[in-house]
Image (cartoon, rainbow, N blue to C red; front, side, top):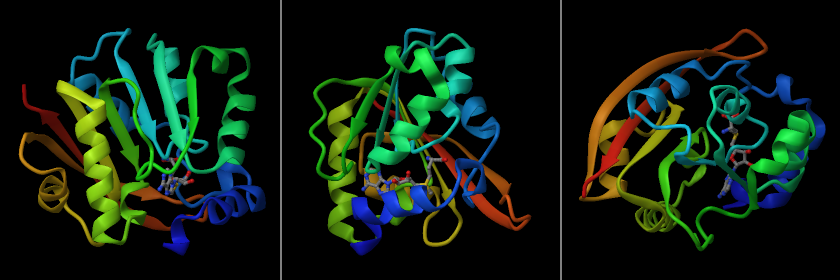
Length: 194
Ligand SMILES: C[S@@+](CC[C@H](N)C(=O)[O-])C[C@H]1O[C@@H](n2cnc3c(N)ncnc32)[C@H](O)[C@@H]1O
């Protein structure tokens, strides 16, 4: 899993500015739409898995959400996100961890992951991920996974999450990279059954 080492990701973040990264989004519109579709209230506990330098938390904070957690393997990416957010970052929780080895100590109303899950190329890592979802997402809570359309679709992600997660919505989105290339993304919103 060389793809997923901390050093690998730290190096990527050190080499490029946040807005030069191929996955950079100024405004994470689809994620926000799907989060709104869950009916989440401002106090909802939301975790962004592999959040890196994503501006999702800025947008959520602008909308009044105030129980935000960002988890990422790269300490450097989280430091850059905190610096960008300034004092607002102190009200958020920041976790430097490999999601597949992380032991969640609380539960969340919503788990969001844009473009981290698909780096788990081994079945054992995907299984470990699903176990964290099952531990961390409260019954009735939601899971949003957005990723480039390559190996996965809503059905294959649903199979990894296992029984007890119902697909609520699935959306296609053409992400345009800062270099002007189009990458097809797919977002799936699941609900954990009670
Ligand atoms: C393609 S970037 C997407 C970043 C962000 N979600 C966004 O949409 O801008 C993938 C992110 O996942 C993180 N990541 C990769 N593998 C991870 C793992 N096993 N555990 C936690 N974070 C991971 C990387 O450090 C990186 O920040």
